[in-house]
Length: 286
Image (cartoon, rainbow, N blue to C red; front, top):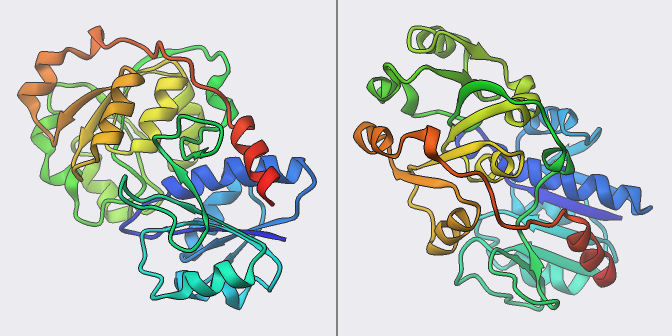
C-alpha cells in the first residue's frame, strides 16, 4: 500500500490535494493500491471532485504511522515539523518520498525528494499538473480571479479597491463562508462556485490568482495568467513563473496591474511534460 499525506486546512488551501489527486489516480491506473491522508476532513471531500474517492483524516505528520504499516510506502507533502518522526518512517517504510518545501530542503534520512529544480533523470519533479489542462478547450472571454481555496484573513475584502473597474469574475474557494460570500458579492458581479474550478480554469481566457498551483494549471491550459505574490515565493518559483510566461506582481498593486495590461500577457511557450515521467520514477523506486 502507498499512502500520500497532503497537508491542508482552512489557512493552507488545497493545492497539495490537487497534486496528490494527479499522482494517486495514475498510480492506481498502474495497479498500485493507494490511500490519501489529509489533516482536514473537508479536504477529503474536495478530493472526490478531483477523482480520489477515499481518504483518511489524521491529525498531523506525526500520525502517518497510525495508519501506514511497516513495509508500506509513503509520499509526504507537508511543511510541518516532523519532530524526528521521519527517522522512523525511513526505517519502517519500504519507500519514503518527500516534497521539498524550499531550495534548501534536502534529503535527511535517505528519503527521495520531489523538487522544483529537477533537471536530470535522478531527481523527481514536484511540478504536477492534471492531464485535463493539457487538452484543447474553448476559451470564454472572461478574466477569472481565484485567490485560493482559503481566505481566513479576508484578503479579498481588504483589497476591494484592486478589483474596481477590472471586470473580474470571482471563483470562490472551498473554505469560504456563506456570510463572506455575501460581502464578496458587493465587489464582484459574478461569483462562481468552487465545484466549477476545473471547468473555469480550462475555459477562461485570462486568470489572475495568488495560488501557485492554479497559475501553472491555467498557463498550461492556455490562459493568459497573472500571479499575485502575497506570500513571498522563492527564487526558484519565480524562475518557474518566468518559464511559463506568467506575469508576477507584488501583492495587490493596482497601478502595477494596470501597467502590465493583461491583454498583452503571453501564453505559455515552454514545453511542459505530463506527469507520466514522474509516475514512472516513483514506481521504479517503490
